[in-house]
Length: 445
Ligand code: GDP
Image (tube, rainbow, N blue to C red):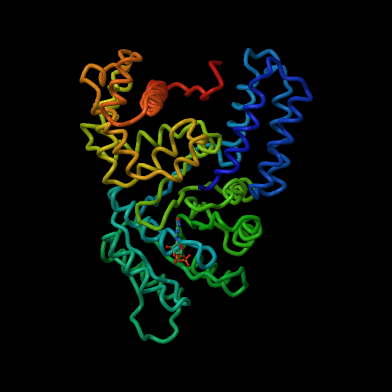
């Protein structure tokens, strides 16, 4: 997955620090050098890498760290905070106009994922209680209008498109007509899909700038494919100069990209990342949270997203019950199993496991993960007595052996499951209480 290698390299770097009681200047320099190399190899822009490592070094050498009980963990914290910083700091929400319709224009290279994003945004806006209208102002790509109509109908939202066979068509005119149409038909948000080219060119920029001028959008979202690596910076700058934008959408974060685009674009352009796209499906899309992305990169486990997704998969009442159980330390293996079973249908189990703390080490296994894993987990939990499911402390050696035999698994399998569950429950509890989760394997602060 995106950031996989970066994540592994950073974890490795921090692991080497763990054995040190106190950090010398040489330790810090060595660590900073490794971080620098990991970031450069992940295609992060050189300027960003330079200022990032300089800040980390300065802070890591400061008294604050020297006096700390656990300097290694402090360094991880610093890197985490600085990562959140280059990803934009605070979450930036989509802004809506005081007087509807809110106009959202999409810009970016061809293939960046604009049309797909229009569908995702449409579906998301609708779920948030809005009445979106998608506008096909990409009249360059032969199939673009049709593609927008397809995603629009999948998302269950209206699409405004020029009549077919109407000559070449003028995207500025289409966009203007769409706004009038939206007002007439009471759509409160308008998402304008625009044409992209394979590379940055003047004609494309002019057209996008003209659409912008004609529609005065509340948001101009620059969509960038996370896979394009080092080209990300030049492309983002060209769009900033040519059209300018109010926010960034990272697409294809599900791919095997090295993630440099994601880590460079916000700090290079000074524009916030507002959404992340993580797949071809219309639901593979989420508001971007700099802090959560940073902890995912540092493999601190994206507990909040995990909890949110669990809540979406359950009905609300169920979710409230789970949250309460977690807070009260009453989250049991039975709940864990119920969660897994519910998620089986949702097909998102792999993604969820990827967000568990410490999952970086499991990444290879995760890549080979299939639904049989759930079946095995089910078998183990179902071989436990109800009392054991309620309280894993009961699980002594002979009980574990019995469970292993009963489920046709090994004792190691049983141990691993119990350990994973206990770690997850502990993490979830800390977060549910509003605390910062401990960094797995780094010991307490
Ligand atoms: P546009 O030219 O900017 O409108 O790009 P499209 O929306 O047509 O997307 C180009 C291709 O990328 C299509 O095949 C999409 O299915 C795919 N795509 C879009 N977003 C994502 C994403 O987040 N992840 C993945 N894996 N594919 C995506």
